[in-house]
Amino acid sequence: MVRIATAAESMPESIKLCYGESDMPTPAFICDAAHQAALGGHTFYTHTAGCIELREAIAAKIDELQGVSYRASEIMSTVGGSMAIYAAIRAFVGRGDNAVIVSPAYAIFSNGVIMAGGEPRPAPLARDGRRFRLDLDRIAKAVDRNTRMLIVNSPSNPTGWMMTVDEQRALAQLARRHDVVILAVEVYERLVYDTVDKPKGLSPPAGLSPPAGLSPQVAPSFARVVANKDRLIVVNSFSKTYNMTGWRLGWAQSSEATIKTMYQAVEFMTSNATAMVQQAGIVALRDGEPYIEELRAHYARRREQVMASLSSMPGVSLPEPQGAFYAFPRIEGLTDSTAFALRLLEETGLAVAPGAGFGSDGEGYIRVCFAATEAIVTAALERLRNFVTSGRS
Ligand SMILES: Cc1ncc(COP(=O)(O)O)c(C=O)c1O
Image (tube, rainbow, N blue to C red; front, side, top):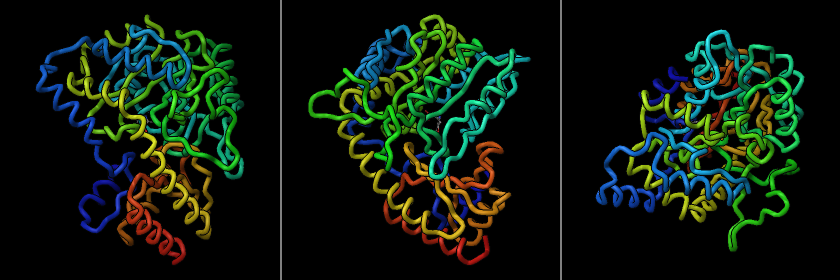
């Protein structure tokens, strides 16, 4: 993926749909908040886990969206969701341990496990026609007495798969049986779409009504089904929800004891997330709902566009992305997605991510990020269509 990105950056006419971020800047109300916070004196160290106002604002948002209650002491803000993922893995996985990762998956999970001295064990999703689904048998087979953690990302990068509540319950049961902690990475929770046959559990649970005037669409959090907070770490981020990738702000939620273990370790790595960025995060959480609505509507249109186009390309089959902002089409007969992506870039100037960048379970696929303008997505799809229909692929 680095090779493709580097080559694409040096090509002036290239279209870069290989990255995991939108081409839209952070909205002005969040930039203003950071500016005002810096001028207002938020320039000092904060508590390693973040200032209490941010942790309380995150707790309130979790309650509002998911109907589950966390105290500020059960939440830590981090330098991006990435830091939260690494700190969580370091807290539970060491030498001789392993972690089972629902795959294909973002490479940070397996690399984090390796850096912690453990063994990453990918457990592939099953493909059911137009949909991925959890393959509980494959996961159960990968678990042994040295398994410390089960890592799952939903809505998923790269597949767009979104776990149903039934799948969450089944995975939680398996984790409990084997005394394994779940790391649930939910950074795309606000980017969910109306799918043809809506997976069960997309709407808020009974008794949880959205605030007046709003209907916040959200993927069901694992926190709804795992009552024992010691058994679960949820990671979330401001990056995708508010287009704040460069700001580096995310969080982890778990039991107070786990959060304490994690922030004590982070003290010696990054310490706190940037003080004025934390303040901007509070404003994003408070005022960001209309923006999220707009963003989701924009991505929903791009998703329709990409699905219609990819589904009509010969030799291409597309599992329907239910969330996030990626299409993950399979290319018939493809055995080397890296070579495919490199040739696609060289010959057409379109950069996509090879499926193999998400582990061997992603081989045969490519990832197309559709968080771009209509004109860019149109041009990209045209280049891809020409490439696959020309026989050069
Ligand atoms: C599944 C997943 N987790 C975590 C991250 C990292 O997000 P952050 O920018 O908050 O570090 C990404 C970013 O692409 C992601 O796709």
